[in-house]
Figure 1 (cartoon, rainbow, N blue to C red):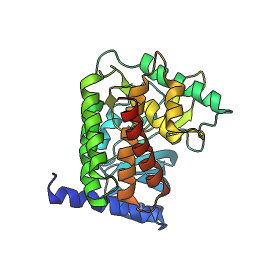
Figure 2: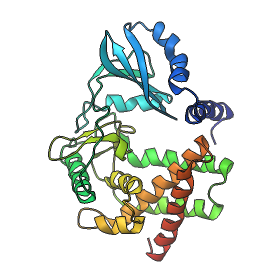
Figure 3: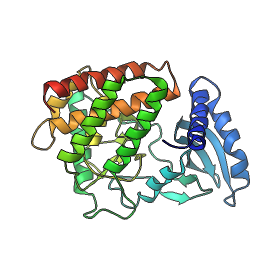
Length: 306
């Protein structure tokens, strides 16, 4: 278990996020938190215009940098800054990094804001998502870069953190937690990691452009190296198009995508996300939705002998 000081620090950050999501003026709250830091930064000429988004791991602002539009990304958890170091290896279009005005922030090119990906049909979206994922695989570095974080190590830490948080929120019963841990151990034993870059948060909001061009997919969770199924699993979880998860798994199960690996990564991310959301905001409707996904997939995994 982590020491009490670290846990307190984490919940201080999460409490700030609760304030943001419960209707206070998020822009003023975050600006007040960082205005003095910006004023005292050796990097001058940065003016906050508006808040673009905020969460447990930080915020992103629209800013003026020497009177030109830019984006300022602030990380509540300093280790997340590693994703910025990954951008030189990132196979998709990424914002240009201008400077690092203080340790937990980066100033970058403002791209894609207000230009969310809007496919014409569900079928077109499926085809183009597969194109994006294949593009990532085909354009990944041949060898694992020094700065990369192995996906299995990253999720091992997240599963342990989720179990700690669940002991506070009691979202899942002990039997379900034990089953998740059992599946994780089984996955580690039976599935090899693909040698490629993965996004780690491959949801609709991070996809700004698709089509038969170099895709724009922003905000990788960290610089992750591992199993491609984690990204398609995240997308299926977020974009079900009225189908249940099992149909989504069957839709994509073929020579390129392993149905059991998809089941596992959807279940694991729903498990982690539901507990993380419960920590942030107890009445968020996604909690019940993701919890049901986990329980249904745990049952399905037993029926399918995974």
